[in-house]
Structure formats: C-alpha cells, structure tokens
Length: 255
Ligand SMILES: Nc1ncnc2c1ncn2[C@@H]1O[C@H](COP(=O)(O)OP(=O)(O)OP(=O)(O)O)[C@@H](O)[C@H]1O
Image (cartoon, rainbow, N blue to C red; front, side, top):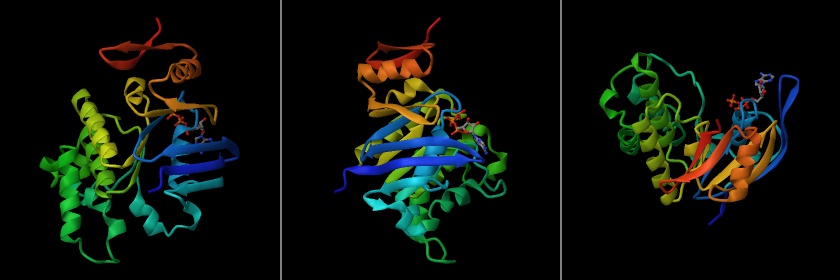
C-alpha cells in the first residue's frame, strides 16, 4: 500500500511567458483530504492542473508511486479524476451522458457502456442528487444543478485520487454540506481528495491544508494546527481570523 497519493518535486510552470509556479515540492498523503487555499492569483488552479498532468511543467509528479510522465493516459485517467473550474461541457448532452463521460477510461474503444458503467453512473448521480434530471440537457440546468452533474462525472470515474477545483461553486448551503459529507465518505473508503477552495471554513474541515501565495507553497500542515491557522491568516493579510466555534474551525472576516 502506497501511503503517498501525489509526490511533486520541483514543479515550475509557465502560462504565456510568465512563470506562475516556482519550484513547488509537495507530498499529498493517500486516503486524506487536502485543501489548497490562498489569495486570488496565488496559482492554486495552475498547481492543480499541473498535478493532474493537464499543464506542461518542469519537475516531476508521481501518482500512487508511479511517475505520471511515464503512465499511459488511460491508466492515469482511471486513477485520477478531475473536476475543473468553469468547465465547458457539451450543453446538448443529457446529465446522464455527461456523467457517463467519466466512464470513458474504463471502456474499450467504441464499446457500449457495460452494466458496471451504468451502475457507477447511477451511484454518482444519486450521490450528488442529480438523478432526477438525468434526462435533461446540461444547458438547461441551473449553475448549481450543472455543478452537481459535473461532480457526478468526476465521481463516476471511481478513481483513487480526485482533484477538484472550486467544487462548491454555485452550490447552495445544503449541497455544500452534502459535498463535505461525500468527501468524508470517500476518504473513509480510502480515496484521496485534493480540493482548491475559496470557502476557507470548508477548507478547514479537511485533514491538511496547503497554503499558497505568489506561486509558492507557504505552508502545509494539519487543519487543526495553530501554525496552519497563522499561515492562513498571514497570506490573507490578516483580514481573516481563525476561530473555534461549535467544534469547528472557522475563518471569519476581521472587521
Ligand atoms: N494564460 C495566462 N497567461 C499569463 N498568466 C496567466 C494566464 N492564466 C492565468 N495567469 C495568471 O496566473 C496566476 C495564477 O492563476 P491561477 O488561476 O492558478 O490562480 P488561483 O490561485 O487559482 O486564483 P483564483 O483564486 O483567482 O482562482 C494569476 O496571476 C493569473 O493572472
């Protein structure tokens, strides 16, 4: 059993002519939930894309002990699932067909979906409460409904490692809470979740926090550690303060 989900060494990445990620080394533990936080423009989405193998970079990334650069695309796609930010997806496809896209890495070329694929899609759409509109085109869904379908697509992969960029975008509070409980279930069953979150109080529910600023990792530590809270307050210019309330760590505006 490999205890490390993702091991990134000396990552540097450019967008256009600008170096956005500067020499990032990061070890993300398996069967844990890690949240990446930091100010706008810190490089969180860029880092997540680099970790997913979606962005050219220097340095090395290993996924479950294997160098990603040497993995076959299909193997990687089975082990690593991706939920992007503001993803464009075919608006004409039904919610069911969008979720079924998550099963592509499991299907033979041009083969119809198997009963296992249909079962995985149903589980995923039910888990995100999107099953009832499975026949509706994506383009006719509200922002939050659409997000739940895209989340179902990521779940349907049934990958070991899930990378999610702003998964709570457009979700109302009950569905944000459902997402949190779902992540806890995934982690309890041995999956690894890595999320970029702007909702700092939700991010603090994770096991570990990666605090970024200006294309660098400033701190990585347990969400319950005082040092993590201080690092978090620091990158946000002490405009937030971390408090303990009702058994949870919360980030509140400092006013
Ligand atoms: N195509 C591009 N060319 C040059 N710079 C870019 C390009 N795309 C993004 N950037 C810059 O890269 C930096 C990191 O962007 P990234 O989206 O990773 O930040 P982020 O931490 O996810 O931000 P946010 O919290 O606003 O979503 C930003 O300063 C952004 O302006």
